[in-house]
Image (cartoon, rainbow, N blue to C red; front, top):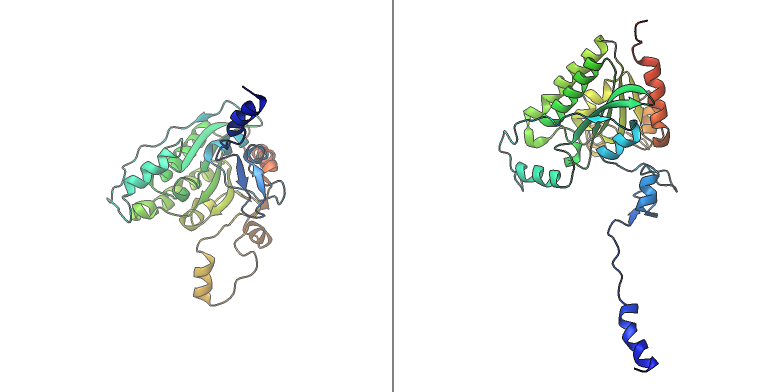
Length: 283
């Protein structure tokens, strides 16, 4: 075989299209910068260019906040689709699809562990699971996490990210608002700190209940926080809303949240708050 034949035979493989993983790149939704996914996740899902705080799942959030060796609390068992709800799809089909894309049974995951050596229960809502919507499973998981904090005499930290109540469960989802409210009251009566981290987005029935009942409210930069949407409010009051309305910085300026904390500083901030607010052991 001549050298020319060898070159010709090598050309197809040289010019062949290489397979590229679908998740190699992540586009920042704010500045549109293309980021290496691995570097983006290593930076706590915060854009290194514009500091946009991306949405993250429950597992990543728990690993960011808790010391190694934490214990996941069991997922609650609840009746599925009690209303036999159907829109364009059956509710059971939507649940099945959400669970196939998740490592958890529903939108709220809780764990018991420590933050810089200080014991705490941390509950996290995952917006990727049906918009983090609050249904019976979320309500039961929240109440179970609060009971664990009561049993262990430690603080309870709740990271919220939800579009509101789960419409497919109707009144049964709305019932979770007073149930969760009662548990926050029990924590207060027991002298245990309840700290809320408001992540993007926190809206609807979650905002109208346990998301705004904390002893301390921390918001992540740029997080959308509110009850009704801006368009609904504008059409109701027939006025243009201020710039940045319902964003973390606006709410902090107007006294609705106590602090806005960058994700890289969140763990240290929570540890400081726990050291101030957690009950002291008797001498």
